[in-house]
Image (tube, rainbow, N blue to C red; front, top):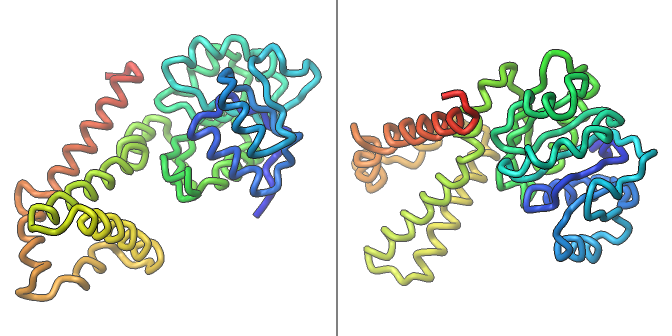
Length: 277
């Protein structure tokens, strides 16, 4: 487990930014080499308590003029990025590369504000990163060298698994599957809990059964290395209860069709938000 490149500048310490920061610190990044720019004073206070020694700043103007970051990481909301980027032009040009955690924003948005010569790696993580079980997909233009790609991937491994796509357009599908995917799983747990309550189980037991079944099945899927269809068949006895339930879920208008339509709708909306509709 390699220590993250250093020094790092993190712009934005919300949920995803904070999750990444915790992962980097756990992997050996010295707090004194982590510069965190977060305008929210309450968040800075929390970070100061959690990791004494962090370089906590309120604005880009406080970044030392002689600081040469190995990576400049943007973890801000997409709707504020365009207003944030121009002020970071000088710091970006001193940085080895820029790492974007900003959903839906293409590499071109960073090049337009920071300069075409800046090396930019775009990522799409998901919310299980908060517990170190995230799935992040990365994209970098061909001009970004192998060393930068490796360093960017190592930074994102601090919160889970990583994978790459060769075409930036594929990030719409990635967003629809893994970026939005945790919400689909949470909905499954909600629906299973509601069904359990409808059959007369107490709310407490229904919630426990639904949550642990979803979480346990996910762990089994990862740990076994088996195909999910194979695992499904292993639970399904001929003429049994599971087969009766799957006859409904796998019917013509069942879960497979709904999931295809749902993921397609998410990918379509991703393209619309990026102005590519």
